[in-house]
Length: 255
Ligand code: DX5
Ligand code: ZN
Image (cartoon, rainbow, N blue to C red; front, side, top):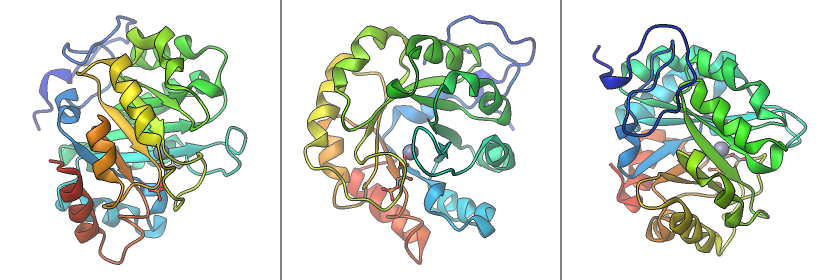
């Protein structure tokens, strides 16, 4: 299928990509225009892993185009979740349906794992500012691997942490719960940090909110400037994931 301007084959090189220019590298990437609209991104952390492909198909048929993958290492956050093998397992299904694989690394020293996730098929990779002394290097590594670079911030980290690396951030990710577990409650007031991130990152940069997002919380985040809404238990935790997806998307005013 036609995968837009980012279908590139050749040796990986280290030019810095932007949202609007083709990104070099040896791996197929989806067009970043996908993230220009408001999107709800179902998080497979809350899915039934015994039927992962079927669950992803359900939400994509309901309109989801961004699939969020939560990677946890048992160090940066206590649980261990999944790795690049799962990204690789989903890449064809998601890309052939016109979707985007959004990887959220909740792991220490994420720069060491970026290449593996990029090769597995990630389209964007978010790294935590708190997870490495080398956040600029980590963001650069993501771009060099041909993916959009996401900067993730824990609830206890100020939005100002984005300021020194603002030129390296393709998307912001504001944790609206403490990272590590699905099914937690949205931390009230998180939207103020989203609004500050919006000021720092400017208008064209997608901002993700992640944690406790559902039909009841998504609106205030959208109003504050968030554009990508990660929804785990509010979608896959429900009996009818497709209907739940549509409900959250409608509340967000999402595509
Ligand atoms: C939490 C993860 C989230 C998680 C959200 O650390 O980053 O992406 O899947 O789950 P819910 O939507 O259930 O809060
Ligand atoms: Zn996440």
